[in-house]
Length: 169
Image (tube, rainbow, N blue to C red; front, top):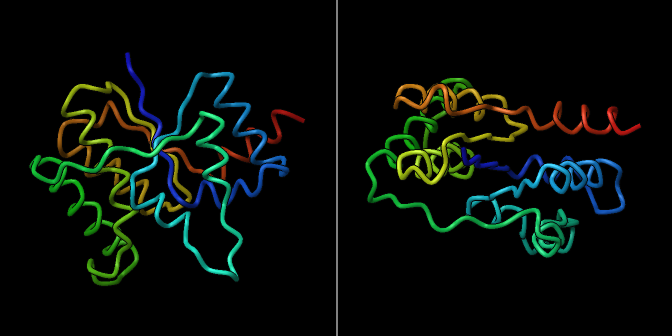
């Protein structure tokens, strides 16, 4: 079985800098379990904002260390990828009571990336690590409607980090 571990912006923001115990706990988890977190391009773009007032999360350090990578571009020509992207945006919009066009596309890209790999059979399971509850629940719901319910798991990013930190102490 091949597993795909998809990470969002919130996970890396919550981890903090490499000197932080949260970052170190996630890095240890990835190394011990031979996990590489895959980030959709939109997530990487969010994490590498070039603003002087913002301390950028250390995504490039994680990539250099080999436990994170940037996904290939999403294949919107694949109908399931487009359907999932649109479906998750609508789910989040309904959950947050706002127009779908105001939903960050990076949140929906998490599920679209899972759909792309599951439909191409390059992964049999997808774990979506996000701190955005609506995005995680939306991903599970929409992917289940596409027949991938048993193959997708939403991992609450905050709880994941907390469990790693308390388990390491």
